[in-house]
Length: 314
Image (cartoon, rainbow, N blue to C red; front, top):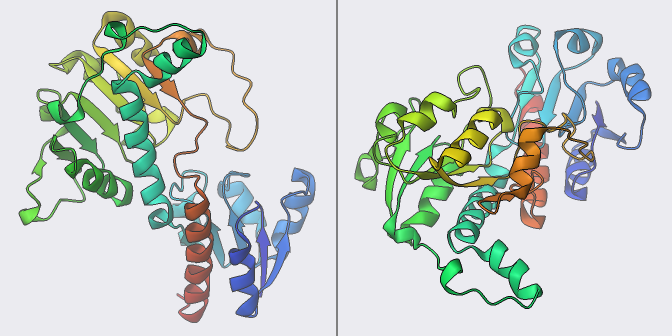
């Protein structure tokens, strides 16, 4: 059995696979042309974000039995078509749930306490205390949109702050004794001061944050997006900031990202330029799930899932 590893990950991935008798080929320095030529030879493909496996590309993978993503989101793989061809589609969303939840909380605390602005000013010898007065998280109501792995971990972290939480997820409900209240996304607009997205990207969640949602929000609010950039309409975010409906943005993902998250981004957009200049915006380069610990957990977790899938073929 042969596995093609498209991206560099923790060594535990290939070590675990090879210990199970799987021959691993490391291809992260290969050109795209070389990758495409080699795909038909391999039964297992392991990737993060380097290629988009649509129907046409999957049809070229003549030997493919398993396609595994070292991460949570599967939007780069046509899973429906792959499944129809008898191909296992694996991911490891539990591997970076702690990292994403902590990053989301860190970005929010940074914005609430104006730490990014204060740091920049202090480095210039500017001491502004009244202007940088912060807001306590326990005074706010937080809406968590998506209650899967990262949504649940984010909720657990928030409990220590004593803030009110509301959960929006039509598929995954909190346990009855959790003390958490479930709402529709429409009802959330009437109570939330913070909205945090923990959802996959698909047709249901495309632009789930848009002009209509922002307009319906009763209170000016903070938005956290550690999911995918296109879950929020960037133009609507800019308009929300300008109108004052949005108090601040914590964005680990943006709509203009390339498919390959590791590539440098050359973005030419007036909306993006506005976000870069606005002190109410904190951005990071899609690193919420990118810790030393999550690298190990995701790499080992996906290797074990591949081995288990081979033991129990469909």
